[in-house]
Image 1 (cartoon, rainbow, N blue to C red):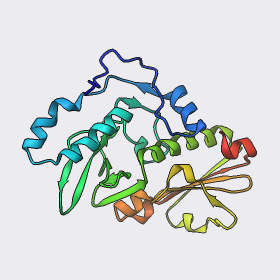
Image 2 (cartoon, helix red, strand yellow):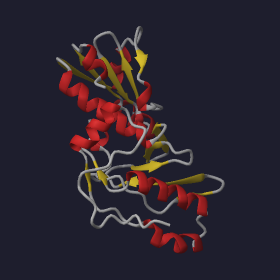
Image 3 (cartoon, rainbow, N blue to C red):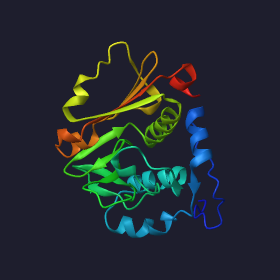
Length: 223
């Protein structure tokens, strides 16, 4: 089995396959790959502690694909994980297994986790999946970066004000694989809805909507 400890790895990240052109460009231009931890050295110890081999395999696969990748801060969730980095799976057969996706940038009421079905989300008072995969999280970061550069106006709404947004005529942006969080594309604007904290912390005042207006065709897609 290949050793994945990137002690001498280049800081220029190799973009994981399967991302959109927009996301690939974002990772190449703004991402940094730092030495990632080799989790395989902990495998035997984790198995001795009752963690199923299949769950350890999921964490190792995440580390191979994303481990050590540092990306610019997200526009919400206090910026998201500082570095994508897996760790020891936790849970049970009855509750399901998950594992950390990387440490927070600040002290938070929740952590970033990968769920039993591969979803990317936050786990505080209870588990809240944000995107169907880590790919979706990265796609969302890339779209926010692109829209923020291309938009003529950016409007941020919070709490009950988000309910005033009219999504009639908008279509979901599929590549972000939105679950609790979603992106919507209209004729000349993009809307990002960040519901994770509102749902996960039972705090409706934390609901946020970001409206990027005045976009042309390139601004709406960006690759």
